[in-house]
Image (cartoon, rainbow, N blue to C red; front, side, top):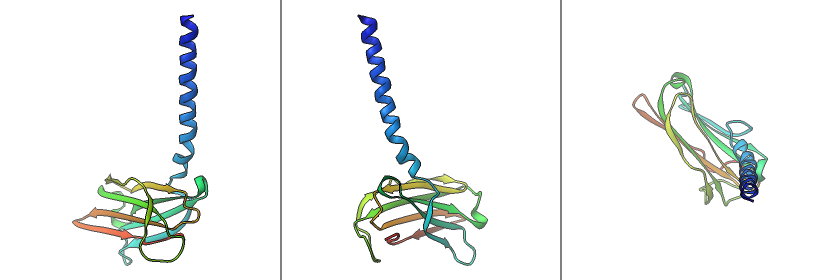
Length: 149
């Protein structure tokens, strides 16, 4: 009897754990520094040291991801780099974003890029991303404004 209860508990735990892993995997796979590029801006334009890129894929009702890349002389240099993205209530146009979902902020010392950070349910909504990098005594920042509408 005790063995059957222990086996039943173990089976329930394995089933529950499989469901958790099975449901978590798609959204993790959807947030990536890859997909269709919907926005890209490198700064400064003459000799870029940083670039903010927003990607889109159709997973989970539309997923947008943002990555902040080190470019040029900053590539491979350790620098505090951050990125964050929001899904906007707006479905078209330009201007400010009324955020309905905001990713966590990736903010650490990196050699090549920060991110990915992503939001889902963006198939019919604009997104807005922001990234920063502190390098060689200067803070470089890029704000995308509303994109992907």
